[in-house]
Image 1 (cartoon, rainbow, N blue to C red):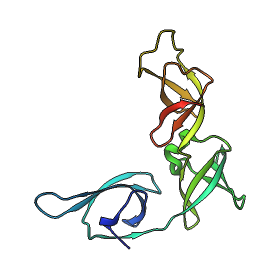
Image 2: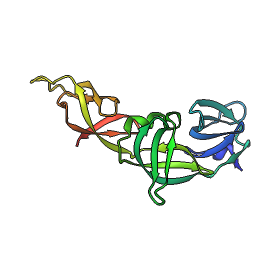
Image 3: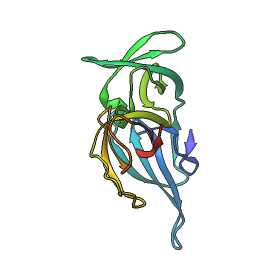
Image 4: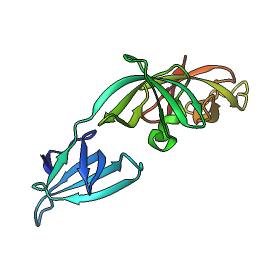
Length: 185
């Protein structure tokens, strides 16, 4: 059991008989009245995000989640196939559980899976991934204005803003936490 005042980002709790991951937990102390916690929780089964107001003394059941290194193999009609890197066991996971991580998955990529009671709850890609630009408008000579960007479609289908000098078939590094361009690779 954990008190609401001790909630931290990334913790997994049981709330309303469902598993939720804490996205954000902010402690508020208004000038008048008692303190409270504003928490954003993501349902690990459905992916929906809810905002809750809790009292610091409210108790919640904390769930311990196992993390495991897995390798993404391929996508088929059953979903996304992953292989456990220690046992070589293959499992399938639905797109709903993967969420936005699907925008960064490449075949053969190592990902971190969060498991509870043997069931995969979510996947975390590496913080930085290198992806190829498959489509972008060509830059023109003289387009050197600082901070100017253009949209680029990556090999996974993700669209990111890139500087004007980035061209088609170049590989770029993308931050998976923010979805932003970092540098050419």
